[in-house]
Picture 1 (cartoon, rainbow, N blue to C red):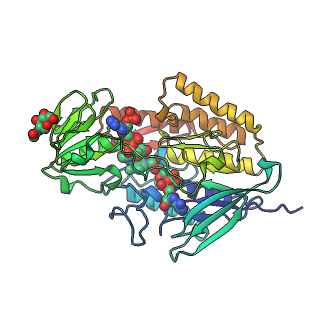
Picture 2 (tube, helix red, strand yellow):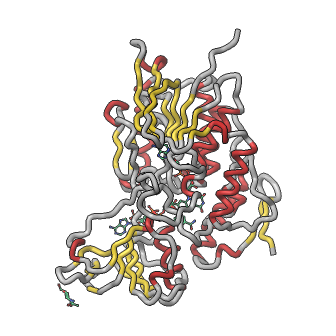
Picture 3 (cartoon, rainbow, N blue to C red):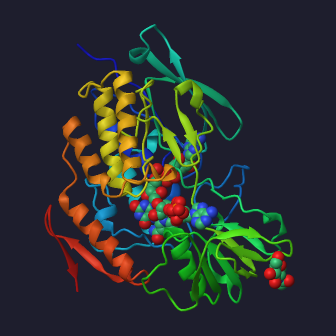
Length: 432
Ligand SMILES: Cc1cc2nc3c(=O)[nH]c(=O)nc-3n(C[C@H](O)[C@H](O)[C@H](O)COP(=O)(O)OP(=O)(O)OC[C@H]3O[C@@H](n4cnc5c(N)ncnc54)[C@H](O)[C@@H]3O)c2cc1C
Ligand SMILES: NC(=O)c1ccc[n+]([C@@H]2O[C@H](COP(=O)([O-])OP(=O)(O)OC[C@H]3O[C@@H](n4cnc5c(N)ncnc54)[C@H](OP(=O)(O)O)[C@@H]3O)[C@@H](O)[C@H]2O)c1
Ligand SMILES: *[C@@H]1O[C@H](CO)[C@@H](O)[C@H](O)[C@H]1NC(C)=O
């Protein structure tokens, strides 16, 4: 008997959306070709560098937060989709252009291009409950809009939300901000360092963006105050970067006040304070979800609202190896859809989510960090692989990831000059 093929909509053609499309296309007996909706005229999402900031020619917000000289902070050996290695000729830490090229190659290799509808923004994703037995009979109405403003609503069996979460700046409330006389900026709007030459810049936030941008700024001749609430960084920072406690207010005269009581002036205050979740096309209440700046919950296995387990959020976790993580999530999601994984009841899934989050709170995770994975990512990916019966991530990924993490703490400026090679599923070597 020929099965009816399931129709899947994919929101976004970044790494997560492309990965979803790739695996859907490899299961032609279960799934029709996916429809991939992409807001911009290109693939790659984050990896699609656009020099312009603010809005594009069509008045749509620029999605990517990429800056001109960014190099990856994971080696290509760890970053790659496990079934699609980077060109062996390339060095380990790549400029962003190489990731964009890699994703284009991935598209060609898997014939994804024809499935993508470019310049098409998803405006609404709405469950349509066709029968009393909610869970098995939900269909999805996806309303999208092309550049001419033409709206279209189509029906799908499932939706993969792959719209990314490093676009919408999170800017903490700093009292007196309107008094600041210099330039206020968020890392989302930062492109290159030259304009800051000779300026004093206070960078707030010292994670990946804050650190990396501070280093770019001093190299270009800026005077940088790296303001943050983490324990004092003990690794060697370039001279010219001074650490300080967090910015807590702007005084009436425009000076910046820090938590330790000190006050200073600056030409620019740059928020490297991270990003917030935003899914303007979803109705959280209707889905039984709470969507906050730094949290989406409940999501079973960090993917599905228990009330609507044919909606999948791919790539919601933080502090992970992104592409390998997406690859596991997508394969698990498709195993749910094709019936090879059967889900527990809605109540059981909700209990499970609460148990997982309670456990993280007990281990000291703050509320805004509940989606951070760190060490948990390996067991998480393993569990998805075991449950859905696909090959787990080779242990060498974890091994090399940990080594690079360690190197970053020792040489935040130079760790990218190392080159690695994978020797086997469990071993890597440092190339001389
Ligand atoms: C500055 C920066 C540096 C990073 N460096 C690294 C690194 O070195 N290594 C690493 O592994 N990861 C890195 N990351 C993480 C990176 O975000 C992931 O690697 C990955 O690109 C995320 O892919 P995604 O598909 O989830 O989201 P995105 O890449 O953001 O893609 C989402 C796509 O969805 C589209 N979209 C959004 N809304 C809609 C809508 N309503 N309708 C239609 N389309 C829509 C967007 O246009 C976009 O193309 C970095 C992130 C940032 C911000
Ligand atoms: N390839 C690269 O080199 C590179 C470069 C940049 C970014 N990235 C990636 O891009 C993603 C986003 O990174 P990100 O650094 O922009 O965001 P992030 O990881 O969310 O970090 C934001 C930081 O800002 C801090 N913060 C927020 N509000 C603050 C306040 N009021 N006072 C003091 N500190 C405050 C946060 O502190 P808390 O921790 O206390 O919440 C956190 O440390 C990550 O995946 C990262 O790996 C990669
Ligand atoms: C601005 O005001 C603060 C107190 O509110 C003061 O400490 C600081 O010296 C003033 N700075 C200038 C440049 O006047």
